[in-house]
Amino acid sequence: MQYKTILFDLDGTITDSGEGIIHSVIYALKKLNIAVPDSTELYSFIGPPLNDTFKNSYHLDDESTEQAVSYYREYYQAKGMYENRIYKGIPKVLADLKQAGCNVYIATSKPEIYAKQILAHFDLAHYFDGIYGASLDGERSKKGDVIRYALNEANLTQLKEIIMIGDRSHDILGAKENELDCIGVLYGFGNKAELEKSGADYIVSTPEEIEEIITK
Image (cartoon, rainbow, N blue to C red; front, side, top):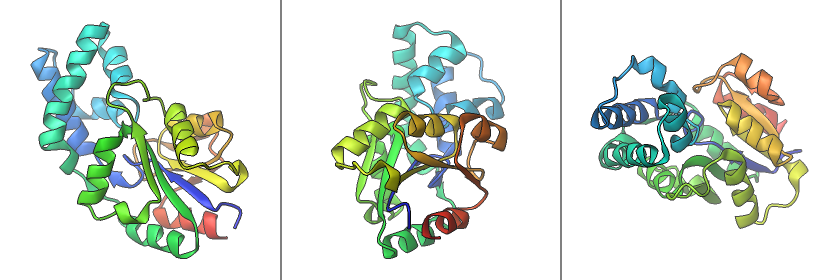
């Protein structure tokens, strides 16, 4: 196998977290007295750093952005993180990759503490050799920075043997920033045009196709 180390995004790649994220955003917007759009318009919040999306979508200043994120986390910590489901086929793919001798990690823009809680809640944490995410203070939130952090923390240096898997453009761009190959998945929240434009090396429609690429 060319790829012996696998970095997975979490939201839109391991779990369908849309419901909890959207409900948390709606809660925050209502607390800020901002008109709530149709929920489909809030899909942009799934994946990228929250601070950036709140600030760019609603033209908030730094103080208001910080308040929005705080409100979001009020709901998310209490309920939102569990309004979530595992994509069909993911547990088997993870088990098969481990059985094949791969080292498997999470690299997510979600705060690391939440990622660990979610994976433990769904009994998936044991598949991963390390779970790496954003810092709560926002210092580490962009995907390229999270991937770099994961590589450093896990002492992963053989870049040609590492591949990143995610569903959005920032996953692909973050991988390229760190000189990694990448797989874009279509069952998450991105689309083919977005993944192609970002430069994904492979694009798949199902979790099973991930395994086919890695174990071929």
